[in-house]
Image (cartoon, rainbow, N blue to C red; front, top):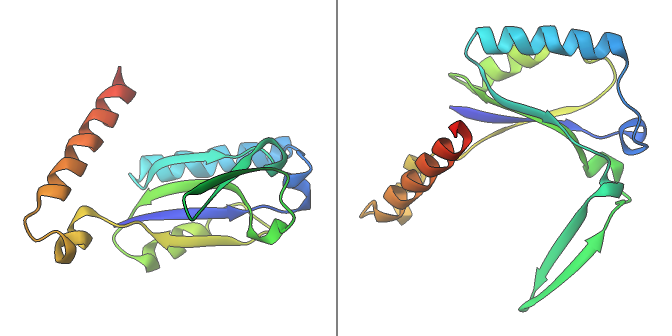
Length: 141
């Protein structure tokens, strides 16, 4: 099972403040543990929403909204993508993180097999797997 682990933004991250050297070192050590255990597939921090944009789609119209965005509690400061056996395992890994004052959300990622009920022939899932293979090949190149 794959899970996206979403680190929520706060006033500090939205102000563009970088984490302390200690937190970066602690996070690097934690990430090394995740990699060594085969859990971490990806992980990145994100710039403040002031450097971002949203695109709203409504009735055929596309509207671009530049950041910053008001609701800090709804913003993301970073993420991991983990491969684990269960949500409980993801929670146990997250409890080992060096965070002190933040909120982190865990969400399961859909797998191709989850779409079998709406793709009985499997053709859409096959195409998806082809795309994933191409993406993987591009990363390695």
